[in-house]
Amino acid sequence: MIRPAIMLEARRLSFDYHKPIIRDISLSLKPGTITGIIGPNGSGKTTALRLLCGIMPPLSGEVLLGGEHPLSKMRRKEIARHIGMVPQNGGFYQYQTVFQFAIQGRSPHLSLLGFESQTDEQITLEALEMTQLTQYLKARVTEISGGEKQRLLLARALAQQTEILLLDEFTANLDINYQVELLRLVQRITREKNLATLVVSHEINLLGAFCDHLILMSKGKIHHQGSVQEVLTREHLQHIFGLDFSIRLLPGGAVEVLPVINKDCSQCD
Ligand code: ADP
Image (cartoon, rainbow, N blue to C red; front, side, top):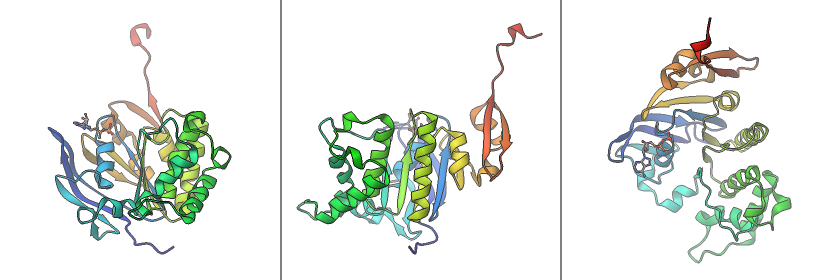
């Protein structure tokens, strides 16, 4: 699928709640790649995602779809045909089935009357197939596991058929096995469909293994961005998290990061 060289570009974004929250953030998302955002709690990662998908307008700066169309000039429904967001809290309703939840992803594509067509159902079934949820189609969302719920959130975003995917704390509260499986799936879909994917996570090692580009955020600003090896250095991480880190380069370009935690030194020597 032919894509623009830049799928989504943020130019010098700033945003305030009652105080400055985001300052001067610029980034671009490219097709077929996964970009990761890492940063301490409260550093502005979720706010940055909300600006990037047009849920909130920036105080200054702009977000450009395909590197040229400002989101500020587009309607919400139109934006949602291009940018899919998987939020931290998925908004599951007790009585929905897995299929009913996933087909919500088709909303931006429906006519004013809001009826889903057979094509919408087919696209939803394919998204559920891709995320290996076909066997749960008729199950209630309360009857599936935490990991399956995350896959369902991804299925809804895939049913939306956007070329840009923004995932906020997508693997939080899952065991390591599930985290790896989910990111493998996200990586495969990103490559196969030539998507531009942005993942916010606290799992530094997972991002180090799966991302093509990394962004380190601190206090509402981008502290550093670049390749995994450029970003995950002892100096950068120490600066951001105030801890010492041991860094190991792995074959294949991944980086392993371990915080160096000193035991209580009252018993040292
Ligand atoms: P992160 O995702 O990195 O944890 P957030 O973007 O959620 O950071 O929050 C950044 C800052 O904005 C925090 O100081 C947070 O308290 C503040 N903030 C987030 N949402 C709101 C809101 N709705 N109203 C006021 N302040 C908010």
